[in-house]
Image 1 (cartoon, helix red, strand yellow):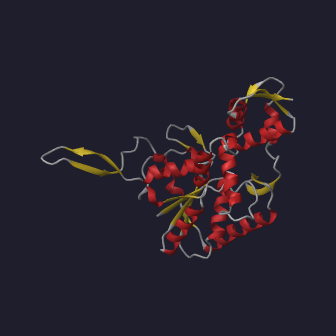
Image 2 (cartoon, helix red, strand yellow):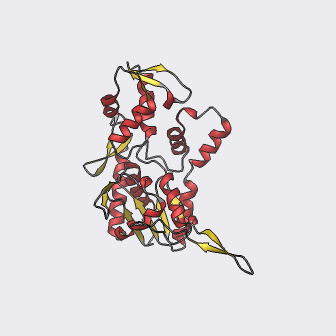
Image 3 (cartoon, rainbow, N blue to C red):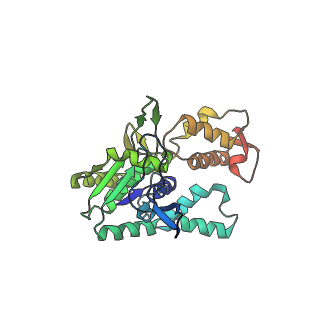
Length: 294
């Protein structure tokens, strides 16, 4: 089973969930290493996913932002991803920039997935209502709809009720620990060919619209202007100086919309350049600088 996810954090956790590791050794006349899964924590909905880490594909293209008429393997998409992840650090160290550019190239992951499909493998897609994940899922359906492989999906629920009656809310698979993935397999379903075509059409419509940003509005992915989330910045920034990291942290803690810190950092930098936000105390690390409303 090939697992497909749309973010580095969640893909990393899935690799741990599927990885076969050495768990210890049995002493005797001949020492024998035992190989298998670590025992998961003794709590509900915990376990491991069958398989190995090599069966995990990460398509972290961040397709909720930018021009989606450009091919995902284009230099435009790679540079866009790098600019989001690197922010101000990019350009300070050429070797670091080159390594980051290589890390942000997910086209090799697409080719790995294509090879698995040609070999007839079943794929299981883990997606959520976070905009980057929904867009990645729609793009996946459009890119590989010509293949007849079975496609299974596990959509992250809005929340789960635990045995102690506590409620845990989720925004993305990046919030789920490795040993918890198996507990969501009861929500797995097989997509029909008509469903795959429907999601592919949704992606084609989003490409035609090609807004600078895509958001989930009333449960539907729709194109929106680049300043769509800016009101969240203006709700919290005041003439009183505050650390940029604190401001972004407050937004993320209170407005869980599946949007990364890097997007708010990008918009804050834009408003600094236009004079609407003032830098009170600068820093090489933009997250560490002190800012306020101009």
